View 1 (cartoon, rainbow, N blue to C red):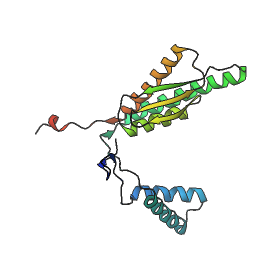
View 2: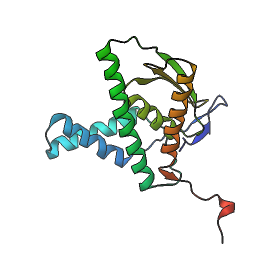
View 3: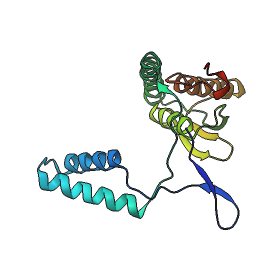
View 4: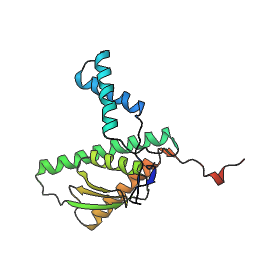
Length: 187
């Protein structure tokens, strides 16, 4: 999933901005607004919707193309991987804190194999939510993540973390089926 591109006035290629409001996003913002105020009244929902429309008009986002469909088994595998890595990382971080060990932090550069902005975003979110690592920079042009890791030890630890992050990317890619290419469609 990547943004639709257009040529700007200066001749450079850039993401096309979506001019219309998106109803699903408005409904989501209205729900969040009601949860924020802990009041599910009609007036509160309407004020959340109006605020959502205002936010979308003030800060238009490029529309993203969704290629493929969701695979439930892949999603379950992704959730299982996330929960298990979260548990293991929590124990590791707790061990460092309780033993008062001095970790050997590093910033690890990971070049993702996918060119999808959606995949890069999900990998960044999952990696940041796992204790002991946080994405400090994401380069959209090269699909590269720079991740601060609490304890890697040596070059072998850096490579193991890089492979683990690429494994997260494969799990994320596993939640979507790719649509057939036009030349593969049998007529």
